[in-house]
Length: 137
Ligand SMILES: CC(C)(COP(=O)(O)OP(=O)(O)OC[C@H]1O[C@@H](n2cnc3c(N)ncnc32)[C@H](O)[C@@H]1OP(=O)(O)O)[C@@H](O)C(=O)NCCC(=O)NCCS
Image 1 (tube, helix red, strand yellow):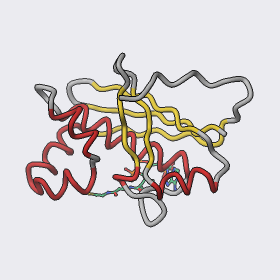
Image 2 (cartoon, rainbow, N blue to C red):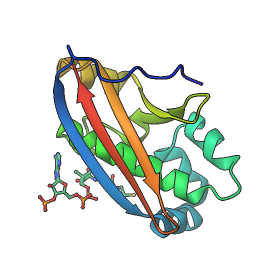
Image 3 (cartoon, rainbow, N blue to C red):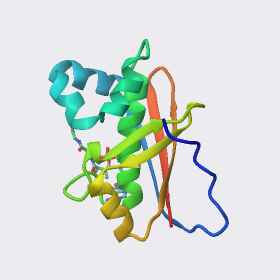
Image 4 (tube, helix red, strand yellow):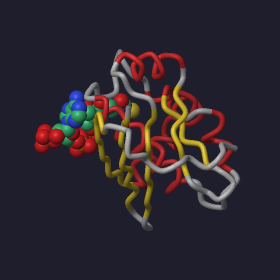
C-alpha cells in the first residue's frame, strides 16, 4: 500500500484534467462475457487484489476503469498506442485513499509532458462509477 499522497502544493502547475463516468453493469457484463482475458487486459494485479477481496467488486472495478480513461483524457491521448489500460493502476493507501501508479510506458508519457504526479478521485453509486484525474508538474 502507498503512503498518503500530499495535497497539491502551491508550486505545482496543473497540466491536464480528465473525467470519466461508467455504467457499472457494462464492466460486469464484459468480465462475465470475456472472463479472465478481459480482467487481465484491463486491470493490474494490485487492482484485482483490492477489488476481488470486496464482497461486490464491480463498482470498484468500474471506478478503476473510469480512472484509466480519466487519466488518458488528462494526458489528451485517450487509451491507445501511447497509453494502455493496464499502464494505469489505482492503488489505495492505508486509509483507503486512491493514488495512481504508472508502468514504464505511462511514466515515460508523464515525464515527456513535464508531469510529476497524477491526482485521482473516485466515486460510485449502485449503478455508476466516476473518476476525476489531475496531472501536475
Ligand atoms: C478518450 C476516450 C477515453 C473517451 O472515452 P469514451 O468512453 O469514448 O467517451 P466519453 O463519453 O467518456 O468521453 C467523451 C469526451 O471525451 C473527450 N475526449 C475525446 N478525446 C479526448 C482526448 N484525446 N483527450 C481528452 N479528452 C478527450 C471529449 O470531450 C468527448 O466528448 P465530446 O466529443 O462531446 O467533446 C476514448 O476515446 C478512449 O480512448 N477509449 C478507450 C476505450 C477502450 O479502450 N475500450 C476498449 C473496449 S474493451
